[in-house]
Length: 191
Image (cartoon, rainbow, N blue to C red; front, side, top):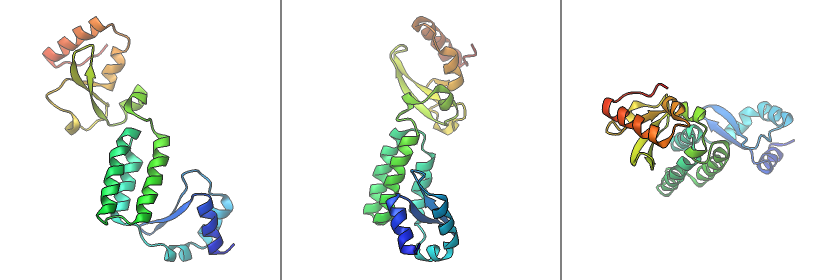
């Protein structure tokens, strides 16, 4: 196989070779990289590296954001940011297209929205979300157990994932009673 044939085969399989600093990476969103292609890439690494230019810092920043996104609805704003970066010349077209593919791939790996996330996954997600409660008649915050406290609005009542687990299945009247107590004494639900 020649390098040209390798590039043709990688394109056919939707695999892209990229540089991350000095590291050669095969971006393979569909896991189509065969053992023989991997061996060929390793054997011709130096030649392939010389063909590739390092990706921009902007590309690496967006790739990291995409990789760390926990719900697909958060990807929408990233798409807008990528478009702005492309329009400003901070990203070249190829980088913008690669990021678009990365977003598509990531959106298939994660829940579509926070409502689709299990409570167990939410507990370790680091997320904080404002929720308009019809039962309580006000907006409260749901916070992952490992959230950054800087993301929590101190003027609002917060329910951690652990508290939400304790509240699962309580009646609306009991929930309102618990909420009143939590509001008055800034307490924590323990069971």
